Image 1 (cartoon, rainbow, N blue to C red):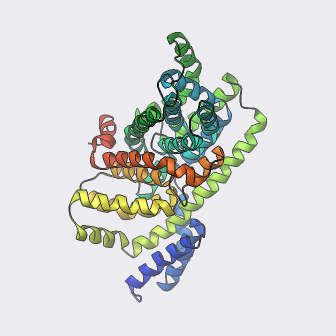
Image 2 (image 1 turned 120 degrees about the vertical axis):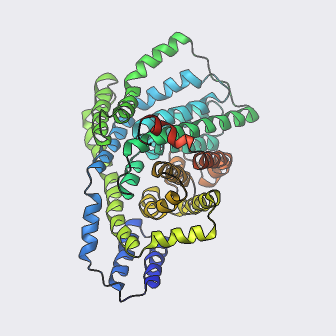
Image 3 (image 1 turned 135 degrees about the vertical axis):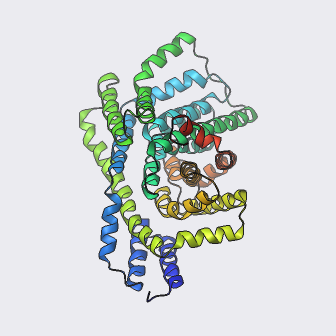
Amino acid sequence: MGYDVNLAIILLLGSFFILILLRLPVVFAMCASTILTMLYTQTNLMTMMQRMASAINSFSLLAIPFFLLAGEIMGAGGVSDQLVEVSNALVGRFRGGLGHVNVLASMLFGGMSGSSAADIASLGPIEMRLMNDSGYDPDYSCALTITSSCQGVLIPPSHNMIIYSMAVGGVSVGGLFMGGLLPGVLLGVLLMVTNAVISYRRHYPVGEKVSFLKTLKIMLKSFPAILTILIILCGVSFGFFTATESAAVACLWAFFVSTVIYRKLKIKQVPQLLFNVLKSLAVVFGLIASAGAFAYMVSKLNIPTMFASALIGISDNRIVVLLLINLMLLILGCIMDMAPLILICSPILLPVCLSIGMNSISFGIMLIFNLAIGLCTPPVGNALFIGCAVGKRRLEDVVKQMLPLYGVMLVGLMLVTYVPFFTTWIPHLLGYLN
């Protein structure tokens, strides 16, 4: 070995974070820091190309374009309206009912698209308009829409779970989907409780009560849309489909529902939907490819083992170690997007968590829940910026309204981190964990 390992680590990580702070896109920052380190360590640059190609050469990654396309189709095909209507029939009658509708509709939509951005873009305009017209503070309406959208990255299907599975070497996607179900619902319940408290304090209106017969009628009308969730959940959990196959079937069903049953999606809209998916895929697969090369250098320099030793050196107490990991991820989530953080941090942090008794599914859900909070935090929170743009609100005003919502998200994170039941009960029930 003709180089100083410590200097190589400083070069790799130091150049990466400097380029990030200079606002260079993450893909280029990872590639540049990898090339610099490879040149210093005299590693053949052809290895970088091989690792990038190998990172995206995975059958399970085919699920990502299908899930993205299903979300685009449902967003344009009238499914959003149905979900808001059925949510209003179920929980709209309570004080702050439209806030509850906001959370429940996002929970249902998250079970179809797996994307917070798609949730805000499709449901956000409807939810915020209804809340604002009923007397809710517009900044609060926007804040609740943003935080409730984060359920989408936890409730299956979530393409971020597929990325995590690939990053750590093949953790069961089905197990991750089932492990995220209870934490996603937990987050929704915590947001509803918080919304109820805020609504009582601010005297937000009580929603109109919907009769049982009308509720039943709305449920029947919305059933084809909700069936998309059942196709994905039941298909994967009971072994009828792989994650990729369930994504393809869900995509076909969403197209059928949107064009034949609700008749809101026109064929002439399809090219634009495909173009939207292609733009998202370019970003996602570019990140995965560049992270493959970056992760190779991380592994070659033995950073995961060194990081694990350093953490355990601070404390071997499970509670303290997990708290430190969460604190680090919360800070990183403020300055980087979710997908690259999953790709970079998973191989480094997983060995640490395995050494203190956490399984790979629980760690994956904890990681994604943590980074979901980062979607709502400045300066780079995607959900925050999209929500403010859709709601036409000032970011600083919305962030003030989000402070109590940040608090309950942190409560949910701590429960998921320290109470294994939330992430292991359903996977254990379905045989994904022994």
